[in-house]
Length: 85
Image (cartoon, rainbow, N blue to C red):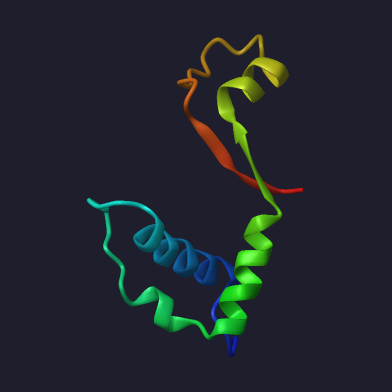
């Protein structure tokens, strides 16, 4: 068993806290506790890791890599999950 939360859990906590601080209401989930779950060093490490991620437009990637797949229907505004660069 780990003595620390998973990186996924820490990333989720940081993103939920940032969402409440940076985005105007209404929020899907008003998480006022997640920020308190991590110490400052852990939050800074997670934010540094998130800053290295890149978002990809799913429709553009589909068109480039799977142009023959007409069954993959994605709206232009869909963002594919993040990937480290």
